[in-house]
Length: 568
Ligand SMILES: *[C@@H]1O[C@H](CO)[C@@H](O)[C@H](O)[C@H]1NC(C)=O
Ligand SMILES: *[C@@H]1O[C@H](CO)[C@@H](O)[C@H](O)[C@H]1NC(C)=O
Ligand SMILES: *[C@@H]1O[C@H](CO)[C@@H](O)[C@H](O)[C@H]1NC(C)=O
Ligand SMILES: *[C@@H]1O[C@H](CO)[C@@H](O)[C@H](O)[C@H]1NC(C)=O
Ligand SMILES: *[C@@H]1O[C@H](CO)[C@@H](O)[C@H](O)[C@H]1NC(C)=O
Ligand SMILES: *[C@@H]1O[C@H](CO)[C@@H](O)[C@H](O)[C@H]1NC(C)=O
Ligand SMILES: *[C@@H]1O[C@H](CO)[C@@H](O)[C@H](O)[C@H]1NC(C)=O
Ligand SMILES: *[C@@H]1O[C@H](CO)[C@@H](O)[C@H](O)[C@H]1NC(C)=O
Ligand SMILES: *[C@@H]1O[C@H](CO)[C@@H](O)[C@H](O)[C@H]1NC(C)=O
Ligand SMILES: *[C@@H]1O[C@H](CO)[C@@H](O)[C@H](O)[C@H]1NC(C)=O
Ligand SMILES: *[C@@H]1O[C@H](CO)[C@@H](O)[C@H](O)[C@H]1NC(C)=O
Ligand SMILES: *[C@@H]1O[C@H](CO)[C@@H](O)[C@H](O)[C@H]1NC(C)=O
Ligand SMILES: [Cu+2]
Image 1 (spheres, rainbow, N blue to C red):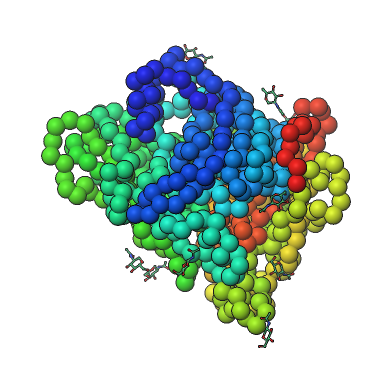
Image 2 (image 1 turned 60 degrees about the vertical axis):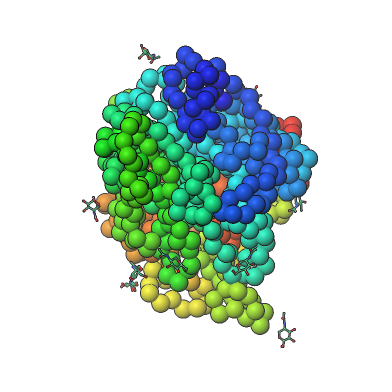
């Protein structure tokens, strides 16, 4: 919900800050209008037209309290099909309003409108919304802030000020051209030209100095930074010069406080950090740059910055100090951070990790290649790059799976997504036979009974190029009960699971040539997408969907379809 606050708070919002004055000042608005349209923007010394919501980039922040329903009227005034997804919002019983194109809805066509309810249930903390059709999410995204029911009951001392920090990625060229070009060529997409903090690349790039995002802080106060990685292709390292930060939540779930020098954040993931302004009064950079683990894959190696500026009279260091960030391919530093996250799991914020499991799945996640006529594509050795889960490269259907499931329309999808890899090999071996690189095309789902308890092991492979994959599940969060390098060992590895305080996430970076084990209870009936959140891997087919069947009671069944579902 949008907050209508006092004049003072509005002035600060214009500077990119949201003053947290407590709930008394604010009148909640439970209905929003999102107008998607082309908007001209100038950065990095060039102007282009981008898709925005309401002309804003990043888009408007939605504010809500736990348990609220917010209604958003989405108008498509652009020339492209589009859908909007509420990332990490479970949408109980209402997959119709989840958003992924051809999974739960047909796209909103140019000139069309779709009204979506965003229903908050268990989530508390930071989430985000983004387009879920072709690559529009590059610029069509924004923050979602979910306050506790009682505004004073954070799991930590109330911070002085709260600030969304949206990390983004910027191409000088039109994103539609980048998307069309790599799909056509079969090769890797062009790398981006910049990363962004709240829409600005920062001082280390040309032409952006005066617009760099700045956060003014009072010495002695505590600031809650709500970090969102909205980048398209990259896990990012982030740090603030001379300051440690304390992680207190991820993916709208509280964590045990974790004091760190840097964080690693996956596309799709959110991390809530407390920053104590406890250093000598000065200006300090916060900075983010890529963590990229795939050998031989080029990446954007630039660094985005914003400024922490202490208030008061002093002569600021020039240039301001930059933070230490781990090296681009430092897998040890990435997993060191991600592997230390733990659920708060406290009396007032309990968790319920499934102890008994009804379904055990092992899904490989691979980058692949298809042979190309005359080896004329731009992938390795003239091949066409692809990606898969359990060797099925997902092919988007022409009407959405949810509609086909609900109305029993045949021929749209199959229910034979494999529970185990169809081909067993040393997934993480240094050298793998070329023949293993070619996947099957298919539109396959995994159907599970309501309230099943699922253990899903995501196994990375070294096909083409082993790398980290930030895997994201719609419709529910999962507990990350274990992870490791190499091949998952179903006898040995479960003995080391953390079933006491594993973090509850909706996105987990499966480490390069490693695995991650997650558990969830299927209490939300519907069609729920599961995919890599690196945009090129999603385009190449690294995805599948779960269908969670209806339960026995009326409140464990899918709601009827809204009357205004966009038609295909
Ligand atoms: C909400 O917070 C206030 C102030 O801390 C407290 O007095 C009240 O009991 C809380 N209400 C609920 C329902 O937790
Ligand atoms: C991608 O990069 C290549 C090489 O720099 C360039 O020729 C091409 O125009 C770029 N593609 C787009 C869509 O900008
Ligand atoms: C970034 O990449 C460019 C071109 O690939 C290279 O010239 C430059 O040295 C790299 N910079 C850093 C900091 O690694
Ligand atoms: C990271 O990159 C550096 C420089 O290219 C290389 O020397 C090093 O071996 C790489 N480290 C890993 C873990 O791949
Ligand atoms: C992870 O980082 C912490 C803090 O820097 C360090 O103490 C610890 O040894 C690291 N653990 C591993 C496994 O590298
Ligand atoms: C798990 O299964 C065991 C043995 O079947 C049973 O005793 C226990 O109650 C179950 N626990 C839960 C939480 O269902
Ligand atoms: C492949 O090469 C042959 C011989 O040069 C040519 O006749 C044929 O048209 C090519 N096919 C494609 C799809 O480019
Ligand atoms: C799988 O490959 C890895 C990396 O080359 C190697 O260390 C390991 O021994 C292999 N495992 C088996 C079972 O062959
Ligand atoms: C799968 O689909 C891709 C692109 O849609 C196509 O290039 C490829 O040849 C297909 N592969 C098979 C095995 O059908
Ligand atoms: C589903 O499971 C939850 C928690 O285990 C339980 O509270 C609920 O009653 C179950 N629902 C149905 C319809 O069986
Ligand atoms: C959306 O939510 C509102 C308010 O809770 C409710 O009245 C309306 O029926 C919901 N619409 C749909 C299509 O579920
Ligand atoms: C837009 O969506 C409609 C309905 O699914 C589809 O028929 C059409 O091909 C799409 N247009 C584009 C450009 O993808
Ligand atoms: Cu991936």
